[in-house]
Each structure stands twice: as structure tokens, then as C-alpha cells.
Amino acid sequence: MRWLWVCAGVLLVPLAAWAEMPSEANIKAVADAWLAKKPAPGFGATMTMAEAANVQVRYTALIAKDLGGMVGYKAGLTNPAVQKGMRVTVRYIGLTPAPAEVTVTFD
Image (cartoon, rainbow, N blue to C red):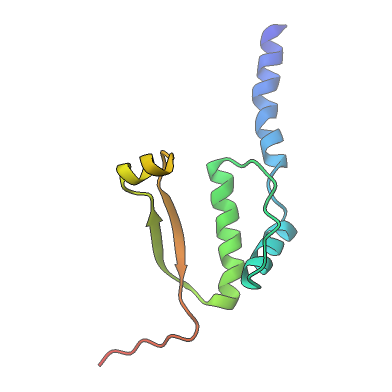
């Protein structure tokens, strides 16, 4: 009987985590607030890395409508000494949007 509860728990935990994924409306509200340079409501959810990556893709698509395409990535806290000073153990990576008003020409 105990193994039945363990199996049920293993099967239901991912469902509980999935239920915390932010809605499309919540992601849009955060993107709109960011574009308006106002405090964002936040996602209010605990996500796995895979879920966070999914939200990042959806969020980036929303802000790209106003900012244009993404041109690169920005990495932060890549130095172990800086990580120690900031009391973190991970690196951060973000997307760099292409400014709409910048035109690049080549001769």
C-alpha cells in the first residue's frame, strides 16, 4: 500500500508544479509593466527551469513586438569571486534587445 502512495506522489507532484505556471495574461501584464517602465506584478509562481525557459520565450516574444528582435545575450555573475561576494552560486544570462532607433550600415 505504501508504494501506491509513493507512486501517486511521484505522478501528482509534476501536476502540482505545472499548476503554478503563470497564465498568458500574467506574462502579458509583466511585459506591459516592463515596457511602460512601471513595477511589474511578478509571476507569483515557483517554476522549474524548463517552465521558466518556457515563460522566458513567451515573455521575450511579447516585448519584442515593441523593442524589435533580440541581438544577443548578456551574462552576469560569471566570475567565481564576484559570485562569492554577491552570495550566489549561479551565473545569469539575459537577452539583449535590438534598439528600434539604431540603424547599422556597412560601407
